[in-house]
Image 1: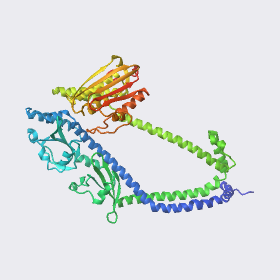
Image 2: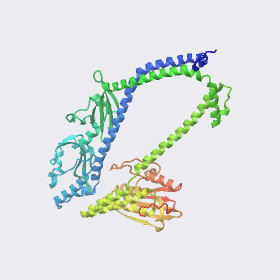
Image 3: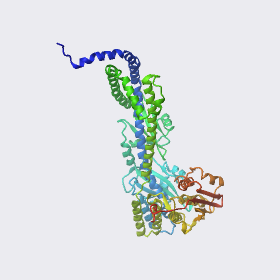
Image 4: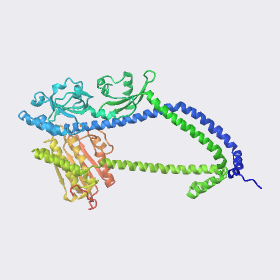
Length: 615
């Protein structure tokens, strides 16, 4: 009677035969994998700490950069308030009011203007420093004598900036109507717009230091971090310890290293341990946000991560070794050839064109599989790169669409409310300006559509020029003449506006005589639609006029709002809209004015395309 054995024992002979057949593979495994793995594990322990420290400090740098972006956002909100007041015609009207005006009325109007600006939650107080001759200079809530500023260390920088915004560091300010507080101030000099060489005052917009303190207090790097702001001279302008504000931020050697790059990580030798300085720049301020972290804390974090990852690597190598030796070599190698053939047939069945060109006999099945898979991986990699690129472009388009969104109803309702407030207070000039601005936005938004009628485009140019006439009274006149047959033709929106803006700001406003005339015409010329903008301003050289259409110039306006010329972009948009043979042409000579002609394909607006703002 035969003795019964457990089922698993029947597989032992096959297992032993598999291991004997795989002895060469086992030896190769020990020499080529196990020994190098041991050496790599040793090297890993030697270098992993430094690598982990780099990763931790890079993570800290990303945290600091994000904190800098958040701080920049808060500063920009205060800057926007200052810019709004700086560009307000009403502010200058009240500041340069004639001596016959009643000072109480002037102060009331100015205070109303400043109270609107103080509605910004980031604005702590708006102050105007004016000449002692103004009777309201001693009010000391919103209005002060400019003499009281002359002892401030940043006052000379405000005068040198000549209207450009200057940020101060945190300092303790005394207010008679509220408790003293540490504030950051955005200061700029105001000039009389009718006589630019005459001083009109100093505008200061204060931001509470708590806004910065609360923001930077949320930055989590380590328990012993030291976080501070410093200016370009290396002086502390903010620190949690207020007594350190105004002192040098660090040793001169470190300051010179921090000044060498806009952001980065610097290791500082300090005693036996040392520390890391992680820093980033705050745009438009010449400030740097710096965090000093003891190197010991980073090392402790790295050791903790290293210990965990080292144990995981050791466990993984051990498990892999056991699996490969006792399972993979015993059971997989016997069926390798069969599986290779199955894979090759599957690849062939799925359609690898070059597979038929391979010589199966040269190198055997493994060589054929290698080359086949390599070819397939190249194709898959190319498809993945194409898919990734398409996804990135789709995401960028979505982001641009989200950034371009605006709620017109909210904008119109807000402007309407401001308009009625102005009417209620008898400020008809403000009411007219707001009404014109509402029309401008309605026409320019065009319900989110890219094309408008010629009539809407001409109305947009008209509203823009009417607004500029309010801004620069008696500095120019204009006329718009158009053939009624072109009014319902379609064109890209905001085509004429940059041309009209150039005619005003770079033509008439830069002319020596300071007053001019702008003519806008629209007519049919043969089979084309012709729109032209002519001014009798300063003009330009032929070379510059030619370059405006073939390359995007990046000249900056004096008011800091961006590129001075948009003709290159206008020309490119028209060529995309109408095709070759259409676009922009310029005729100009210095002292004789400029004429810009826009040649378009005449396209009638279908009812489904009609997105005019006034429809």
